[in-house]
Amino acid sequence: MVRRMAPRLVPGHFAFRTLNDAADLAEALPQAQGMFREREGISVILPADPGAPLAMRQITLDVPSALDGVGLTAAVAGALARSGIACNMVAAHHHDHVFVPEADADAAMDVLRALADGSEGKS
Image (tube, rainbow, N blue to C red; front, side, top):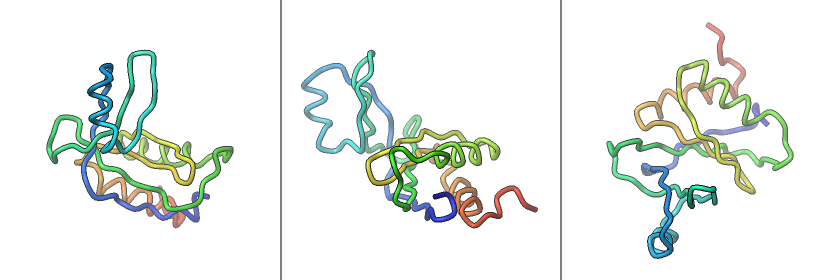
C-alpha cells in the first residue's frame, strides 16, 4: 500500500476539540471532519482558522486501504517521526488520513511522496 499511496493535501485547516455538551455537539456535527467517543468526551475534528492554536492540515492517503491492512500507518508515522514531524493518524473506511501541524504540511507532503516513491531516507 505504501508504494501505491498518493498523498493529497486537503484544503482547509483543522483542530481537534473535545465536546461534552449535547448542544455543542449538535452544532459541531455538520462541519465535523471526524469524531471519536472517548471517556473524556466526544473528540471532534473541526475546521479552524489558519494560525489558530494547534491548527492542523489534513493529508489524505489516496490509496484504497484495508481496515485489516498491516504497515501503512506505521510506515507513514515512522517516516514523519524521522523528519521530526508530529502526526495524528485517522483510519477511516476507505482511506487513511494524516493530520500534521500546519507549519509542517509542505514538509510532510515531501516526506510522504518520497516514502511512496521509495526514495525516503536516501540522499
